[in-house]
Length: 504
Ligand SMILES: Nc1ncnc2c1ncn2[C@@H]1O[C@H](COP(=O)(O)OP(=O)(O)OP(=O)(O)O)[C@@H](O)[C@H]1O
Ligand SMILES: [Mg+2]
Ligand SMILES: [Zn+2]
Image (cartoon, rainbow, N blue to C red; front, top):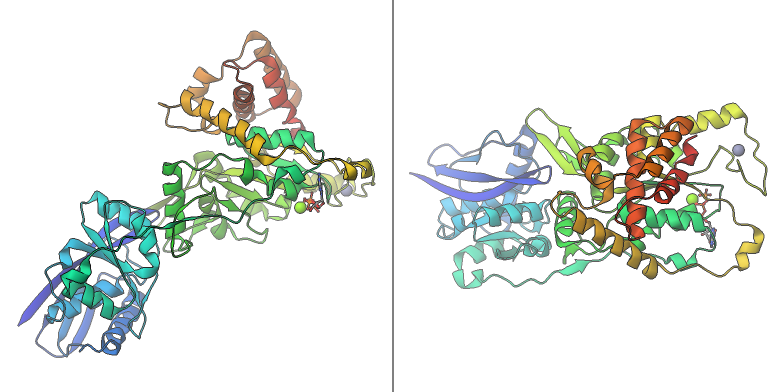
């Protein structure tokens, strides 16, 4: 006797899912449980979990020869989400589970020894791939149900234990898909820019950066309000579009960071990693690649507070994602790609003591100390910080000043400027000026004669690199968009150059 059961499941690599087939063969012979197609350590662990979960759920574990094959062999399968399809396959081969509906569903879930089912990573990309492949539905952990429900037109069967999974397959009436309406995943509320007194130049820089998706560096003494302002940027960014929300949520899904019960991310991500972060945690890594902070910040904001406290190496690995909008992690078997299009906001003091250029307190650093401090930010990284703005200490008189403009009205201008960009770039496959390519810049960032002369003079005077030159024009394009101007005028360019002054 030999009975074969086949089930569908899936594996994720990067933010992509690929189908995996689980074949279970149970035949007479000396009791033996072999698994092929999984890395060694996972095989051992999965086998033990599946055996215990079956027994502890009140089913019989067959005293026969069991062979499980996960195909295709060249897809790297890690993690524990294959437990449930393997267990159901073994029960199906014994006739305990009805085999009729099994092939219609994608099944995934990690089993614990007592037969309960844990949440698993990557359900959103798996659900999207299942829909694309014409699969009818998914049998998955209850805790992941709302994530799968984001994909419309896919039946979702949430189960919390192996017993429930068996019942769902054996009693077709109980297979009525649950209607799940996920709550939007809201971020903690963001404080308002109205709290910020003075700092008009920095406020203007926040608005320009947000309007065009440009990177921004805030430089100033302790207590000037750098952290305060950076934390308020999410409040002036436009809402996520549906496509953006899907992409950002998929990254969080793969990282296992979605809150059960919630669906699409409702707000732009705001990530503020501590300066002790490793390069793998920042850009992603691991043998089974996981997204890093730059990808968790996809379509949102990455805030590096005390930017010079980050190790130089960690800052350097930011260069690739900043340039390409994605992270590529090469592994022997495959290459994982994580999206990483984020707006970078950095904050730093001008010198080790913090008071360089302060009108109230005296800087006690030596010129060598100051040079070494600034040198931690390499030229190539500095080039990618499109706007740099001085944030001076507020004079004591400012503490009685009224607060500034509220976030809502700043945001309205940002949204209007983004709308101009969206309309202009509707066929260019980009959304913001920050993403302009050289070819697109030739079309959309033309300068008049005065502007060209101004920029030529600035290149010589400020020793701008070719990259900085392009970035100044992109910022000028955004300033023109905020002003509702079709063409970049000399004064737009002059303002963009003013935010590069700290380069000198
Ligand atoms: N422009 C401002 N308007 C209102 N309050 C301010 C302003 N600047 C600073 N403050 C107050 O000072 C506090 C400290 O500001 P914040 O932490 O943002 O300074 P910082 O520039 O990040 O300093 P550090 O370099 O030490 O990190 C704020 O929480 C706020 O209460
Ligand atoms: Mg701070
Ligand atoms: Zn100093």
